[in-house]
Length: 453
Ligand code: SAH
Ligand code: SF4
Ligand code: F3S
Image (cartoon, rainbow, N blue to C red; front, side, top):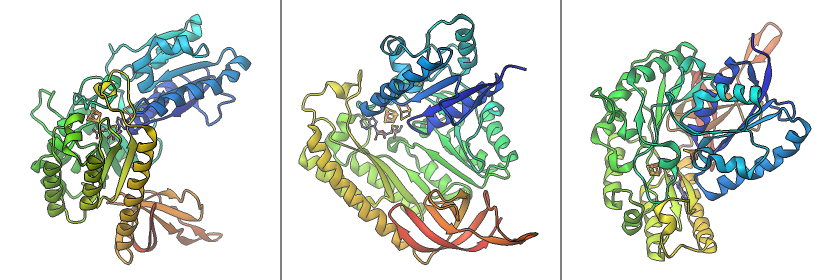
């Protein structure tokens, strides 16, 4: 038996990173390094980092600063940096942060146990961001965080090179996983009792283009829809330029495909969209939205929006406001443009001052909050199916679930008669019909009507 050691893992960034962290935990547990909550008694600490905005990157160095005293106290502690900052900066992290022992990239996670062993044996400091191993990790190894919902990567990387974005540099070229690998992973999840999967890719609509198999994303959805036990399928992210009628029809027809679509527009202005190299106009985007709404009337829509892209004028900004009002998203992720190294937009003239970005950011936030709240209020009195994920975040006496449209619903715990009197029923993983009693900004309140499975 390998010796027992403790791992602390700090994850930043998007769902891809969460999924990669689940891989890291599984791979390290297999070599006797177990996940702990406690940084103080860790033998290995790993930061899984994000580089999407400047702030995210700064966070890494401030975290590393906080870890320095632990390293002084325990010189055998191994500190590793993985994820997108590691992939971009490699060796530089070792130079800038002497407390770091290991830098590894997004493409060689499978090598992690071997790299740690080498450090334990030789005391070397290593930066390895090359990808000469397979990116896929044996799905049985992945240590899921949760029992109801799971992330499943269907492809790696991105070939779009939007002018503001660092992801193609941190995640490499687009590479689809085979349908067999994805199918096996999801079947394994269903056997373990998982009910919902979110398929991950930077642009799921490009799925399959690089495979020998003649398969595209809607075909993949149809295949997964047939897996017994899985009740709900979600996916992200869908790039508007590649959203096809075939996908819209598949979403409308497949019983397990949830009525929720994340379709990031980024800006309502055609000038800005052109300079971002997004590959669509606002009119083309709106036409697709209309088709989606017509085919799937209950659809909930969300988007990413960037405020203050270089050269954005007041008029461009107004167009973003207009499009938000016209689509009426259920929610948006709003970002202030942040120049990223190596990306074309970071070199564009007429960068926008931060105070201007901030004012506009607040304006859009206010507008979207009004829309979100009013859409949530429209649901009051309706009966919706939710999948229970566990206890309420802030109140242990409540249960938390999600609608098919990806809205969080909190309901009072249900009780049943047990041997010692009434006890709280464990409904995690169950589908329940609830009546919505109140629509709030950050979710819905409801009461249970019936438990269906
Ligand atoms: N592949 C996804 C997005 C991944 S990054 C897609 O194309 O939709 C998530 C979001 O971060 C992007 O949609 C964008 O809104 C935001 N983002 C990316 N780079 C950024 C930057 N340099 N500054 C601010 N926001 C950025
Ligand atoms: Fe970034 Fe554009 Fe690729 Fe999304 S599609 S990851 S925004 S380059
Ligand atoms: Fe995700 Fe951040 Fe990397 S958003 S892909 S972890 S740069």
